[in-house]
Image (cartoon, rainbow, N blue to C red):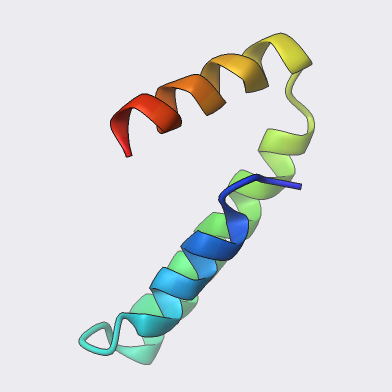
Length: 56
């Protein structure tokens, strides 16, 4: 499970100015990213987590 998945989904749900189509596109992209992420090695995940932690 992504450490930031809930925050991302919550942020999307709060994006009132995005159209339903845009929200749907974001959710689809997020789910694609999620399945890609779960296939990555622990080494790569660690780098992604530290990158996100320092930049967001």
